[in-house]
Length: 327
Image (cartoon, rainbow, N blue to C red; front, side):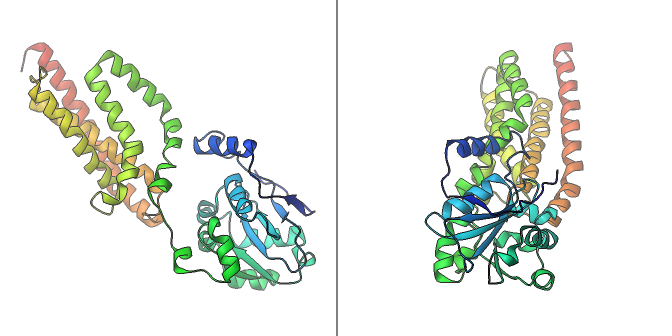
């Protein structure tokens, strides 16, 4: 849905209140996915004048709030592009934070009549979608790319340049785990079925539940420490590690009637499931490129599907053999 740009300068401050925090929580949990947006246009932070800097961001509410909260006590303009409620990095990849939208926003807001200078400060992660020369030729504004993180904006503006640390994309433990809660909503019905399975067949239901939650939370936590460059392989490696203790427990307990068919079925069913969860995480991580994601999809989806189908077939054969007294 395309939104119209405000023709007047809107005002905002750096305060993030309870309303915004509730919006952030909903966004992190995946509710109303494309509804977390603000009106595109030119915003005044503090009391900017004709010489004040112009920062550019997306109309995704979390991006907007992150920038303005870091600018408390400062005077600046914030040019908010219509990225359809998508964050800067993803919008740059999808084309909604691009050269054409920058030119459109400058024209629609009458920015040339608001400031005397001709400099736009864009977030570094928007660089894949923006051609500097075309912006300059199209509207006369020079593009400068600021730091990766909005929290570094004050230091960048005071120093006039980005340090190497400001240019570096960090994807630490907190950054990875903050992405996990949205997966709880994406897999909510499956998790409810696993809860039912844990009640009906406690051991196997619990095993499937533990592995699924591990794929959602433990996988991103351990991501840098798992072997191989492909996230699908890392997921399957983690899956094999996690299935093994359950198998060993079965072999050493009253469930020791476990057959080789059952062991094979458990590995073939659950290992690719963790691989799929790992593959799904490629859209959230800085570890994979767009071409890398496509390569992983074509490389791993078919083998993982064949493993899962084989595991299901072996499980059915094993169950029939056990109850029929064949094994």
